[in-house]
Length: 234
Image (tube, rainbow, N blue to C red; front, side, top):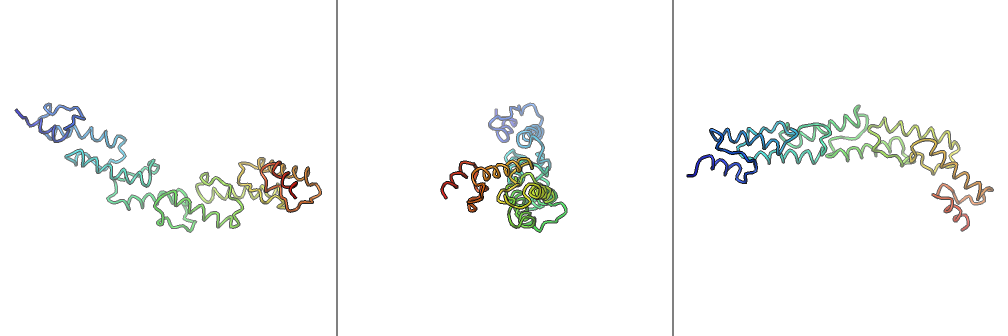
């Protein structure tokens, strides 16, 4: 005899994935309710999509597709869920993205000082890159300090602290600008920068003490051997 509970299983769990016996339930709704708890565990274990209620779905596929749709938004714009926005709270993708943009701006430009329109960007990376380019053009228009690891800076204020440090180093270590080709932003501290300058001074003193080779700058070479070969080639 073909009983109703077998029909329930054929419709809702034909592959016996959830190992729930439908005969233990009084009606189909109770059986599906039990399955829904397992759907939730399968598709939304960490409750990241809390506004999608499995109780609103009769079939697993429909619930899974609803979760996957919102998950695609998260993977597209906030893969690690860093901003803890639930995409299932939004009816459309653009609304979710708009709120993420607000988060990005609050993180990188909280006082809206930088002339970069957040609405022009669909990814955090592109927005940050545009901000960094703006910092460079605004505060380092000659592009002298290109060695920074810009991922270390969150805001323009962070960048300016690093930039002003390097300007201070050059005043202390190279006031006459003799070694201006050496970018102090490549170094983590003034001692490293000073060490590089001292090496170039030593090379110059050893191999060109009378400054006969003015067109051979020790700053253009990464090793004393390269510098010496350049001098010998004159």
